[in-house]
Image 1 (cartoon, rainbow, N blue to C red):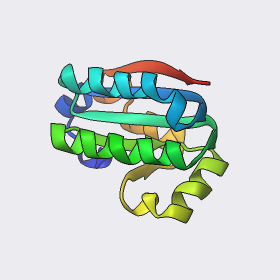
Image 2: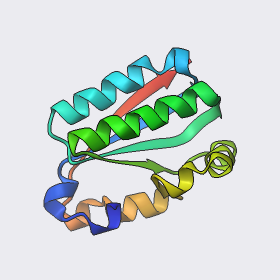
Image 3: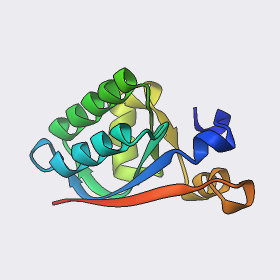
Length: 128
């Protein structure tokens, strides 16, 4: 879990800011970004879903596949600040009990602030 990571682990954290609609047909860039983060040795990947306005069943399937892929690679995957609509969908299908969800960007910022020596790598992924 994110709140148990040491500063050394935080230095190996990739934040992927996802913007748009998350559907199976448009998630290739996000999957590539996750693969790149895992191949680059990041201990944790955080998906910021605050700008995702829509997710369908194919998008949920991609999230589950990404979770499995990260788990096999020994990388922790978490979701940060999901939009209200996405949060409801995650709760309805039970993914909120399987993957760590960080509810607000303020919590995320407090965990990854420069005050504690953490270095965070950020990347934006557009899904349209």
